[in-house]
Structures are given as C-alpha cells and as structure tokens.
Image 1 (cartoon, rainbow, N blue to C red):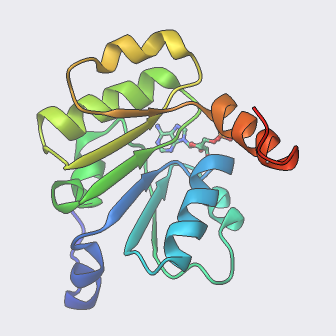
Image 2: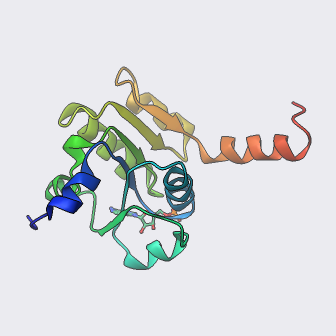
Length: 147
Ligand code: AMP
C-alpha cells in the first residue's frame, strides 16, 4: 500500500468517495466539491479525470475498484458516504456490498442502469440512483415542473 502524507490523510477523513468519473460520477464530484465537501474520486482510466472542472478541489486516484486492496488504498473504511457510478451494475452492486458488509460505510448510493437489479440491494440500506430518473426529473424542470 502507498504511503499517505499527513496532509493527504486529512483529505481522506470524513470524505465522500466517488467511484467512477464518467458523466454521472464527474458531475457529482464537481457539484459536491463546489459544496465544500471532502471528495476522493477514483477511476481505472486516468483520462476520465479530464471531466473534472478547474474548480474541483478533491483528490483523484487511478485504480480498479474490483480490487479490495485498491479500495483500502482509497480509504474506504473512513468514508462517510460512497457514491458508486461505474457503467456496470454488477461492479456497482459488488462494491456496494463490500462497502456495507466489510467497511460499513454510513451512506451508500449506487447507480443502477437496470431497475430490476435493485432487488440485489434489498435490506442493506443502500440507495439506488437510476440515471433515467435523473434525466426525467431534468425534463420536468425544463417543462416547468409539471408532472
Ligand atoms: P460512464 O459509464 O461513462 O458513466 O463511466 C463510468 C466510469 O467508470 C468510466 O470512467 C470508467 O472508466 C469507470 N470504471 C468502470 N469500471 C471501473 C472499475 N472497475 N474501477 C474503476 N473505475 C471504473
């Protein structure tokens, strides 16, 4: 495991850990960072971090979240919340289970592209995010909030 400097260690405490820096993950990272939250965003592809805005003030880490040692390197154990947003429901559900069962992260949010996968989170107090619902909400805002 890599050595973490004291300055970095304080950034890792009480943080929001965002998994995947695609469209959803980067947009959450940019918004959470603007709100002043302590953010660590991880992605297996370093180019993904190009989506972060110039104002992003958090940490980025390159690695594969299906490897437990990488999740530990990202200090998952001290995260106050984790937002899991890769484009693969299987990976997202897997990481969510690890976050709950092994590290007991207080707040866990998971992107699911297929609503039928929500059953895989049953009884674990994990909240599902459905990207299609987010766009529907946006559409409703565009049409003046009418349902
Ligand atoms: P998108 O599907 O465009 O929203 O992007 C999802 C992001 O998740 C991409 O930037 C991927 O590189 C990232 N991603 C997918 N699988 C993994 C993984 N196993 N570990 C870390 N990042 C991943």
